[in-house]
Length: 200
Image (cartoon, rainbow, N blue to C red; front, side, top):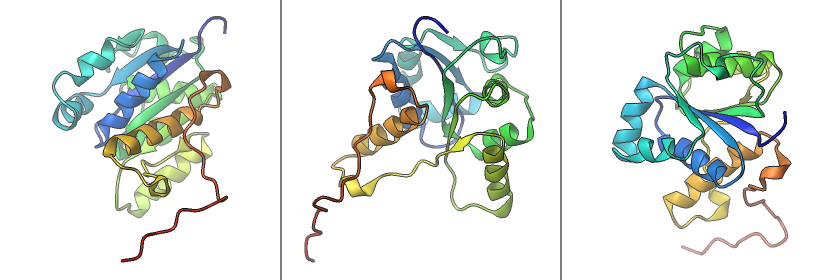
């Protein structure tokens, strides 16, 4: 693939929409060609959790936003070469559909394409607690080649704000695509001098 890296970002209806939007913002600061697909439930979640204008602002940053029902879109074809896809957040419903090949919308179809073409697919799962069916779907998605990366905040960074946690999770997701040229790196853990917890 010549030219800038193409990355697909999917936002499903789970809580944690701010992470997906931050992924878009960080990628937009590079030379990536970003393709965005947002589920109907995600539109509602974004408006509630982040704000009514947030999705429009993210859409303005991407190369193209594809309709959730446009199964004939470019990102639905394996011939459309990409560097991978991030689904952030990824609902249990979307992950289960991806794991079982139930391709009833463009988000899960695009994700399935990444798997069949052996490209990176990062699923930032957002659900807790998990029952056995969820865990089996996680295993099935992993066996098919997906990287299941739950939205897990890194408290060892001793963050001072929610935004720092969001930034770190978004950077970790981008890092899992394995594109060295992006130069978006989450802070690394170092055990040189671990911080000392203050005494109560």
